[in-house]
Image (cartoon, rainbow, N blue to C red; front, side, top):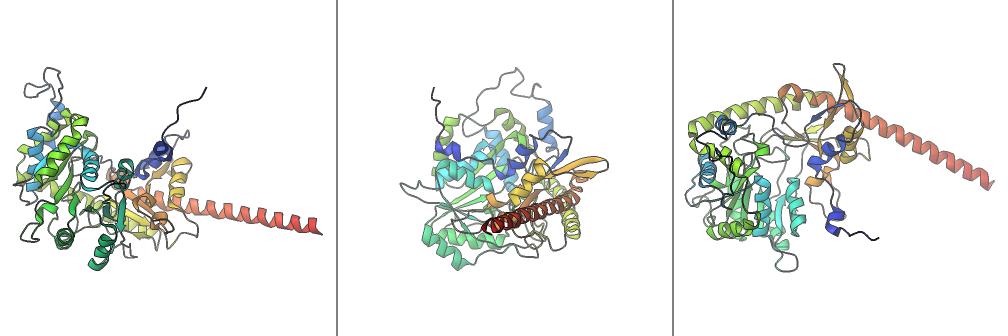
Amino acid sequence: MAKPVISNHFKSRQPSEIRLSQIEFAKRKDDVISVNTAIGNVSLPMYPAMQKRAANLISDESPFKNGVVEYSPTVGTDECREAFLNIISASDCETDGLYVQITEGGSEAMGLMILGCCGLPWTDEKPLLVIDAAYTNYMLFAQRLGRKIISMRRELKDDGKFTLPDIKEIKELIHKYKPGALLIIPYDNPTGHFCDHKTMVELAKICVEENLWMVSDEAYRELYYVDAPSSSIWKVTEKDVSGITGRRISIESSSKVWNACGLRIGALVTDNKEFHEKSVAENTANLCPNAIGQYIFGAMVHVPHEDLHKWFCKHRKYYSEMMTKITDDLKKRLPSVIVSSPDASIYSVVDVKNIAKPGYNATDFVLYCSQEGKVEIDGKFMTLLVAPMAGFYNVKEGEINRGITQMRIAYVLPPEKMSLVPKLFADLFKQYESRRETKKSYEIRIKNKNVKSQMQNVK
C-alpha cells in the first residue's frame, strides 16, 4: 500500500548548524562527556527578580495562584511589554512612541519581521539584506517562509577583526536586488563583532536614502567589551538621521542578557504603528505567547536602572575575562589559528584556514567530534561540540563558502568547563587531521595498486 508523501520542503530540511552536533552526539553509545559550546544555551541564573517569580508561581501575588493558566492577549501582557521598554530605556534609549509585541522568544519575532518586511518571489520580491556571516536562523526562517536572503560580504582577517564593505558596495547591492530591509546585529552573533553608534548611523542613512526598513537584533545589547558607549537602533534618532522614524524595528529576547533561554520570551519592537498592528494581526493565529514566561519576565518592569547597570557591568566582566583567556589559550595551542576578536556578544569564530590541510571541511570535523572523537582529561573521555559556520553564510551557486574552515564557539558553560575548550579543540583538530592524512595515504596506496594491476593486465 502506498504511503503519503512528505513535501519537498520537508525532504530538503537538515538540522540547523547550531543543533547538528548535539543531535549527532545523542546517538553515541560510548561513555564520553560532551562539552557543548555549539549553541548559545546560557548556563547562568536568571535575574533575581525573575527567579523570585519563578519560585512563587502559586503565591497570593501570582495570577496563577488558583492553578489557572489562561491565554494572554496576542500582543502580550501590559506588564511584560513595559518590562522590555524598561530594559531598552536602561541603555539610555528614548522609548516614547515604541510599540511592543511579545513573541515566543526572539525566534518568532524574526519570522514576523521577515513576513512584514520581505515580499514573496512571485509577487513583490523584496529580500532581506544581511551581513555575512549572519545568524543562521535568519536563513532558515527565510527558507521556511519562502523569502529570499541577500548578503554583503565581510572578511575575517588574520588579526581576528572583521571588515565591512564600503558604502558604495552596499548601495550597489541594494540597487541590484532591491531588498525590503537591512538586518544588523550590533553585538554580533556569530562573529563577536561590535557595531558601534557611528556605524549604526551610517547604515541608518542608507536605509533612509534607499527606503528600507532598518532591523536590529538586540538580543545581546550591553554585552560588549570595547571602550565605547553601548549601541542600539533606538539610539539612532532624528538628530542623527532625518527620516529614520517609522522604519526602525528591533528584535528583543530574554534569553541572553537575562539568562532565560528556555523561558522563550522575546519581543518585536517598532516605532511604526501600522507595522505593529499588522504584525499582531498576523500572530493572532498563534493565539498568544507563553503566559507563565511573560509573568516571570514581567518582573523586570520594576527593576531600577541603577540595578540593571550593575547587572550589565557584572556580565561584561564575566564574559570579557573568559573570552580573552580562552582566545589566548587557543592561539597558543594552535599557532596561526584565527580567532575572532572578543569585542561583543558571547561567541568566537575559529578559522583554521592557515593551519588545515587542503580539503578540510568544518562540518565534517564537527561530525567527527560528535560521533567518534574523544580526548582523555583527568581520567575521563570528553569531546567538544561546536557549530560549523557554513550555514551562517548566504552563498550563491558557484561561490566558495568561507565557512568551510570556520566554527563558532559559544561561551555558555561555567568557566571551569569553558577552560577545557582550547585543549579539546586543539587535540580533536590534530586527531581529525591525522585521520584525514591516514585516509588519504590509504586511498593513494589503493589507487596505485589498481593502476599497477591494470598495467600488468595490459602486458
